[in-house]
Image (cartoon, rainbow, N blue to C red; front, top):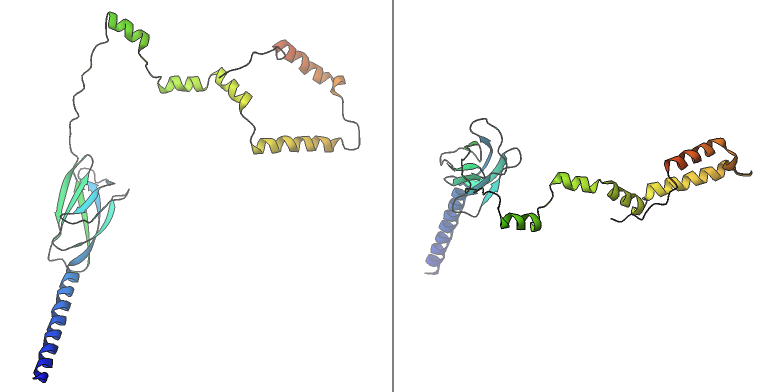
Length: 218
């Protein structure tokens, strides 16, 4: 009796192992890797950021900037291709594919969609126009903003308040060190007797460089 029990147990175990390995091999044989590209149907240009989803499965990917994608799925799965501005496309993976790798090129067709209507109304009139002219806050466009940022007043404020950076401070320090080294061991030159400096002084005086300027506020 014990021998019969052991024989049946061994037979059942071997059959279970065989069936499990056969089922596992069948599952693995259905798994393939699909590599492809998404392109426009009219001009064959790459379509980027296309979402590729496996229908009824939490699985998917998207195409890169060149329209190339790679996805692992099973034979018989349905792939859904979707992108903004293009019609959705579906592709059914054939069951009779040979091998583990498969290439596909999916052509996307541009979709025509209509935006909600925009109603253009006339300017207000009468009392409404007077109120709008006085109190409406119309933002500046980019050109007006650029003019304000590059005005003489704004540039003067930046010149007066922007501190020097590291390279500028280093250049100023090295210039002073070079000047001191040039006159090392001797009397430095006095520019009060230099006619060129007097010429620069008179030119600056004529231009009004020494006039007292008002404080610049921003």
